Image (cartoon, rainbow, N blue to C red; front, top):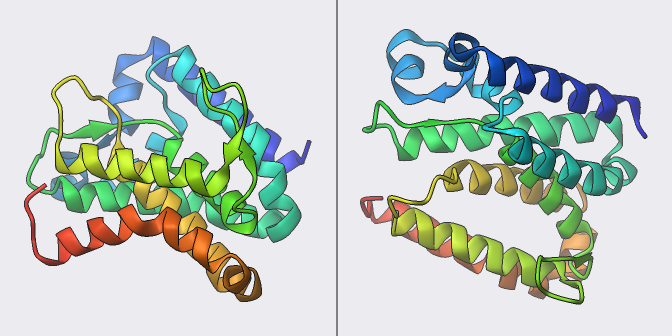
Length: 217
Protein backbone atom coordinates (compact mmCIF):
# COMPACT_ATOMS: atom_id res chain seq x y z
CA UNK A 1 0.00 0.00 0.00
CA UNK A 2 1.30 3.47 -0.86
CA UNK A 3 2.76 5.28 2.16
CA UNK A 4 0.82 8.45 1.33
CA UNK A 5 -2.44 6.55 1.46
CA UNK A 6 -1.46 4.90 4.75
CA UNK A 7 -0.64 8.28 6.32
CA UNK A 8 -3.99 9.75 5.24
CA UNK A 9 -5.96 6.77 6.54
CA UNK A 10 -4.10 6.62 9.87
CA UNK A 11 -4.41 10.39 10.41
CA UNK A 12 -8.12 10.24 9.60
CA UNK A 13 -8.66 7.34 12.00
CA UNK A 14 -6.73 9.02 14.82
CA UNK A 15 -8.54 12.34 14.46
CA UNK A 16 -11.92 10.61 14.15
CA UNK A 17 -11.36 8.57 17.32
CA UNK A 18 -10.29 11.74 19.11
CA UNK A 19 -13.53 13.35 17.99
CA UNK A 20 -15.59 10.35 19.14
CA UNK A 21 -14.39 10.90 22.71
CA UNK A 22 -13.91 14.67 22.83
CA UNK A 23 -17.00 16.76 21.95
CA UNK A 24 -15.08 20.04 22.27
CA UNK A 25 -12.45 18.84 19.78
CA UNK A 26 -15.16 17.59 17.44
CA UNK A 27 -17.01 20.91 17.59
CA UNK A 28 -13.82 22.93 17.05
CA UNK A 29 -12.80 21.20 13.82
CA UNK A 30 -16.12 20.23 12.18
CA UNK A 31 -17.47 22.10 9.17
CA UNK A 32 -19.98 24.72 10.28
CA UNK A 33 -21.12 27.72 8.30
CA UNK A 34 -21.24 30.38 11.04
CA UNK A 35 -17.67 30.00 12.43
CA UNK A 36 -16.23 29.88 8.91
CA UNK A 37 -18.09 32.96 7.66
CA UNK A 38 -18.07 35.08 10.80
CA UNK A 39 -14.82 34.08 12.46
CA UNK A 40 -12.85 33.06 9.36
CA UNK A 41 -12.08 29.63 10.79
CA UNK A 42 -11.02 28.34 7.39
CA UNK A 43 -9.13 25.37 8.84
CA UNK A 44 -12.54 23.72 9.27
CA UNK A 45 -12.78 23.42 5.47
CA UNK A 46 -10.02 20.81 5.64
CA UNK A 47 -10.08 19.49 9.21
CA UNK A 48 -13.71 18.37 8.93
CA UNK A 49 -12.54 15.82 6.37
CA UNK A 50 -10.69 13.98 9.14
CA UNK A 51 -13.72 13.70 11.45
CA UNK A 52 -16.52 11.12 11.29
CA UNK A 53 -19.85 10.64 13.01
CA UNK A 54 -19.16 7.08 14.14
CA UNK A 55 -17.08 3.98 13.44
CA UNK A 56 -19.27 2.78 10.56
CA UNK A 57 -19.02 6.18 8.86
CA UNK A 58 -15.23 6.06 9.21
CA UNK A 59 -14.92 2.46 7.97
CA UNK A 60 -17.15 3.04 4.95
CA UNK A 61 -15.09 6.00 3.78
CA UNK A 62 -11.72 4.37 4.44
CA UNK A 63 -12.64 1.09 2.74
CA UNK A 64 -13.87 2.99 -0.33
CA UNK A 65 -10.66 5.02 -0.36
CA UNK A 66 -8.57 1.84 0.06
CA UNK A 67 -10.17 0.16 -2.96
CA UNK A 68 -10.10 3.07 -5.41
CA UNK A 69 -6.98 5.03 -4.39
CA UNK A 70 -4.61 2.56 -6.14
CA UNK A 71 -6.30 3.27 -9.48
CA UNK A 72 -5.84 7.02 -9.03
CA UNK A 73 -2.26 6.58 -7.84
CA UNK A 74 -1.49 4.48 -10.92
CA UNK A 75 -2.75 7.19 -13.30
CA UNK A 76 -1.93 10.41 -11.45
CA UNK A 77 0.96 9.51 -9.16
CA UNK A 78 1.37 10.54 -5.55
CA UNK A 79 1.17 14.29 -6.15
CA UNK A 80 -1.88 13.93 -8.35
CA UNK A 81 -3.59 11.72 -5.79
CA UNK A 82 -2.80 14.25 -3.06
CA UNK A 83 -4.19 17.12 -5.16
CA UNK A 84 -7.37 15.22 -6.00
CA UNK A 85 -8.08 14.00 -2.46
CA UNK A 86 -7.49 17.24 -0.57
CA UNK A 87 -8.71 19.42 -3.43
CA UNK A 88 -11.96 17.44 -3.38
CA UNK A 89 -12.37 17.90 0.38
CA UNK A 90 -11.84 21.65 0.07
CA UNK A 91 -14.03 22.01 -3.02
CA UNK A 92 -16.81 19.96 -1.46
CA UNK A 93 -16.83 22.11 1.65
CA UNK A 94 -16.59 25.35 -0.32
CA UNK A 95 -19.57 24.24 -2.39
CA UNK A 96 -21.43 23.43 0.83
CA UNK A 97 -20.51 26.85 2.19
CA UNK A 98 -22.00 28.46 -0.91
CA UNK A 99 -25.16 26.35 -0.96
CA UNK A 100 -25.85 26.76 2.78
CA UNK A 101 -24.48 30.29 3.18
CA UNK A 102 -27.81 31.45 4.67
CA UNK A 103 -27.98 28.57 7.15
CA UNK A 104 -25.40 29.46 9.82
CA UNK A 105 -26.00 26.31 11.88
CA UNK A 106 -25.44 23.91 8.97
CA UNK A 107 -22.63 21.52 9.83
CA UNK A 108 -20.99 18.47 8.31
CA UNK A 109 -18.09 16.08 8.83
CA UNK A 110 -16.42 13.23 6.99
CA UNK A 111 -13.94 12.39 4.25
CA UNK A 112 -16.74 11.76 1.76
CA UNK A 113 -15.82 14.76 -0.41
CA UNK A 114 -12.24 13.53 -0.81
CA UNK A 115 -13.32 9.93 -1.26
CA UNK A 116 -15.84 11.01 -3.91
CA UNK A 117 -13.07 12.87 -5.74
CA UNK A 118 -10.89 9.75 -5.81
CA UNK A 119 -13.78 7.48 -6.78
CA UNK A 120 -14.88 9.65 -9.70
CA UNK A 121 -11.34 10.25 -10.93
CA UNK A 122 -11.08 6.45 -11.15
CA UNK A 123 -14.42 6.21 -12.96
CA UNK A 124 -13.42 9.00 -15.36
CA UNK A 125 -10.33 7.01 -16.35
CA UNK A 126 -12.38 3.84 -16.87
CA UNK A 127 -16.15 4.45 -17.10
CA UNK A 128 -16.73 0.70 -17.42
CA UNK A 129 -15.03 0.00 -14.10
CA UNK A 130 -17.20 -2.49 -12.22
CA UNK A 131 -18.61 -1.16 -8.95
CA UNK A 132 -20.50 -3.31 -6.49
CA UNK A 133 -23.63 -2.02 -4.79
CA UNK A 134 -25.30 -3.64 -1.81
CA UNK A 135 -28.11 -6.05 -2.77
CA UNK A 136 -27.09 -6.01 -6.46
CA UNK A 137 -25.43 -9.39 -7.24
CA UNK A 138 -23.17 -8.18 -10.08
CA UNK A 139 -21.01 -5.06 -10.42
CA UNK A 140 -22.45 -2.26 -12.54
CA UNK A 141 -20.42 -0.05 -14.92
CA UNK A 142 -18.91 2.96 -13.21
CA UNK A 143 -20.67 5.50 -15.42
CA UNK A 144 -24.07 3.97 -14.59
CA UNK A 145 -23.18 4.05 -10.89
CA UNK A 146 -22.14 7.69 -11.35
CA UNK A 147 -25.41 8.56 -13.05
CA UNK A 148 -27.38 7.02 -10.17
CA UNK A 149 -25.12 8.63 -7.55
CA UNK A 150 -25.30 12.09 -9.11
CA UNK A 151 -29.00 11.80 -9.82
CA UNK A 152 -29.82 10.89 -6.23
CA UNK A 153 -27.50 13.54 -4.77
CA UNK A 154 -28.88 16.31 -6.97
CA UNK A 155 -32.47 15.26 -6.25
CA UNK A 156 -31.85 15.30 -2.49
CA UNK A 157 -30.18 18.70 -2.69
CA UNK A 158 -33.11 20.18 -4.58
CA UNK A 159 -35.68 18.36 -2.44
CA UNK A 160 -34.17 18.18 1.08
CA UNK A 161 -35.71 15.80 3.60
CA UNK A 162 -35.60 16.17 7.39
CA UNK A 163 -34.40 12.59 7.84
CA UNK A 164 -31.54 12.92 5.35
CA UNK A 165 -28.22 13.60 7.10
CA UNK A 166 -25.87 13.20 4.13
CA UNK A 167 -23.76 16.13 2.92
CA UNK A 168 -24.75 15.91 -0.74
CA UNK A 169 -23.15 19.23 -1.64
CA UNK A 170 -19.78 18.06 -0.32
CA UNK A 171 -20.13 14.76 -2.20
CA UNK A 172 -20.94 16.54 -5.46
CA UNK A 173 -18.24 19.18 -5.08
CA UNK A 174 -15.63 16.54 -4.34
CA UNK A 175 -16.74 14.29 -7.19
CA UNK A 176 -16.61 17.23 -9.60
CA UNK A 177 -12.95 17.82 -8.72
CA UNK A 178 -12.06 14.20 -9.45
CA UNK A 179 -13.84 14.37 -12.80
CA UNK A 180 -12.37 17.71 -13.82
CA UNK A 181 -8.78 16.73 -13.00
CA UNK A 182 -9.15 13.54 -15.00
CA UNK A 183 -10.74 15.36 -17.93
CA UNK A 184 -8.08 18.07 -18.01
CA UNK A 185 -5.02 15.85 -17.66
CA UNK A 186 -6.18 12.98 -19.88
CA UNK A 187 -8.07 14.64 -22.77
CA UNK A 188 -7.55 11.64 -25.07
CA UNK A 189 -9.24 9.39 -22.54
CA UNK A 190 -12.04 11.95 -22.21
CA UNK A 191 -12.60 11.95 -25.96
CA UNK A 192 -12.61 8.15 -26.08
CA UNK A 193 -15.26 7.87 -23.36
CA UNK A 194 -17.12 11.13 -24.08
CA UNK A 195 -20.58 9.54 -24.37
CA UNK A 196 -20.32 7.61 -21.09
CA UNK A 197 -18.96 10.65 -19.23
CA UNK A 198 -21.70 12.85 -20.67
CA UNK A 199 -24.43 10.42 -19.61
CA UNK A 200 -22.97 10.23 -16.11
CA UNK A 201 -22.74 14.01 -15.83
CA UNK A 202 -26.31 14.85 -16.87
CA UNK A 203 -27.52 15.42 -13.27
CA UNK A 204 -24.55 17.76 -12.67
CA UNK A 205 -25.47 19.77 -15.75
CA UNK A 206 -29.04 20.00 -14.51
CA UNK A 207 -27.83 21.21 -11.09
CA UNK A 208 -25.61 23.82 -12.74
CA UNK A 209 -28.64 25.05 -14.70
CA UNK A 210 -30.67 25.30 -11.51
CA UNK A 211 -27.93 27.30 -9.81
CA UNK A 212 -27.60 29.61 -12.81
CA UNK A 213 -31.28 30.53 -12.69
CA UNK A 214 -30.89 31.07 -8.93
CA UNK A 215 -33.29 28.36 -7.90
CA UNK A 216 -33.49 28.31 -4.12
CA UNK A 217 -31.99 25.14 -2.64
